[in-house]
Amino acid sequence: MSEEQIKSLEADFDARIARDEKIEPKDWMPEKYRKTHIRQISQHAHSEIVGMLPEGNWITRAPSLRRKVALLAKVQDEAGHGLYLYSACETLGVSRDELYEQLHSGKAKYSSIFNYPTLTWADMGAIGWLVDGAAIINQVPLCSTSFGPYARAMVRVCKEESFHQRQGFEIMYKLCNGTPEQKEMAQDALNRWWWPSLMMLGPTDAESVHTEQSMKWKLKRKTNDELRQQFIDQTVPQADILGLKIPDTDLKWNEETGHYNFGEIQWDEFWQVVKGHGPCNKERLNARKGAWEKGAWVRDAAMAYAEKQSNKKIEKVV
Amino acid sequence: MKNENLYNYILGIADNNLILGQRLGELCGHGPSLETDIACTNISLDLLGQVRSYYQYASKLKGDNVTEDSIAFLRKEKEYVNVLLVEQPNTDFAYTIVRQFLFDIYNNLFLEELQKSHDITLVAIAKKSIKEVSYHRRFSSDWVKRLGDGTKESNLKVQEAVDNLWTYTDELFHLTDADKAMVKEGIGVDVTVLKSKYYKIVNTLLTEANIVIPDSKWFQKGGKEGIHTEHMGYLLNDMQFMQRTYPNMEW
Image 1 (cartoon, rainbow over the protein chains, first blue to last red):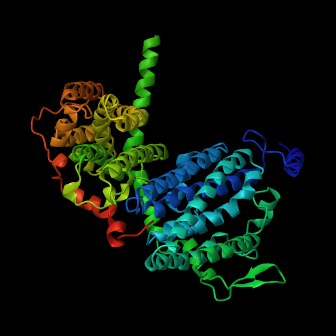
Image 2: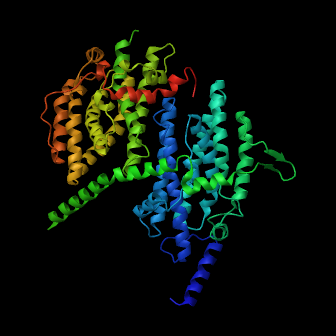
Image 3: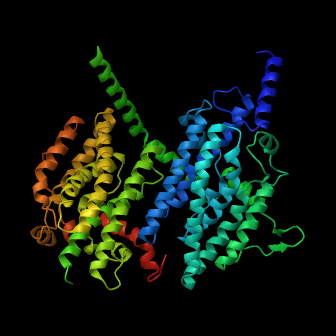
């Protein structure tokens, strides 16, 4: 294809996105668009799958049958999200096995928040309330992103996430209206999850490398800092309802801007965790690799069996 | 208590579901593929859902301050009356599937009969549960075939799991005193009559999956009387952790 032809295709492509048309897997797309989407969607899928681990840590110890069932269902939803997102990614010409390989080798990233440990039952509440809350703020705009399979997957993901967030808030509410020991457990969880949740919305705009292009392709509609502000403005009143104190001495309502001012985020910690040195990076990756390696014989057996069955069918025909 | 036999009878059914559901819950997030992970969690969810119906019924019979959670979380090990089979650990995926298969075939036959009980609540629970359990049976049977007739390695692993779990199958067909009393009243299922049908189904499917049926005539028992294997204490330790550490709180 000549350079001119490519330019004309690109112009058509950009115009389609500008008109809010969806790009489908078989449509022509610039190579960079394909690669960026593989990167972002697979990162998102990996986050769902790794995200099962910190909460999975409490399934066997959930404090009541109702909570145990709800937590199992929630973690299972995350597996389901992983499944649609890997499938959406596969439509761009990459296999699930390749994507796993990228996760296991450390080449692909996943959300850093899942490298923090879940130490008490209240962490199940805090994750639902804060982490899923931040995820929703990040993800709702993706329901209208330009790549069709991603946008459609996100509609369902967001519905389930908003249910998870309510469930998390309800766990916190129950703790905060329980015994002093329970309330203390809730406060401790908020203290540990607050700052990582703010970091989850990504580096500041000045440091964010992908924002401009992603805005153009509607992979992003607001900048990281705008999303973070939205999250804080939305969450502070919820903490008030719970009677919990946000662990930020600089947090203060600003009449002029109509937003909360907040303290400085420790970006060193963020980069440390991103670069693989958070409290649980090794554990999370080892758990994923372990499950994959231990399951190899199962997947091989399933393939061998399927082949035998299809050979039997062919033999019957002849 | 007036309905003591019925109460104990219900625990005899539901404790199996609770302990197996707990075991499967350990695997969530660690399955050999996303699809099997989701399926095993689903089975766990079904079993725990059934547990809640049974324990809610049992707690009504017991009265006082008994709740589904006090039954689930606050008994001593000796008071749990599940069969030994369901408390066996998730040694590998072959053990998980074979344990499931050996239980599902029984559970499906059992629920077919429980639907004929004179106790209307048990009938209602059985009718709801059998829809779920017939799916579990299909899932575990398919996987036994897939792994048994897959590769040499998978065949050996399933054979090992069958050889080691076989010893726990006979207990499924033992009758406790509460069982006997409930059979007499037309409420309980006489599980002894299910035994020959059970082994016929299990043996046929294992043979189809290229698995040799163990010829051992020695079987383990005790779970139904509260005498468990060494694995049970650890399982309860995890399961009861919150209720024991933070007593008398609502969650």
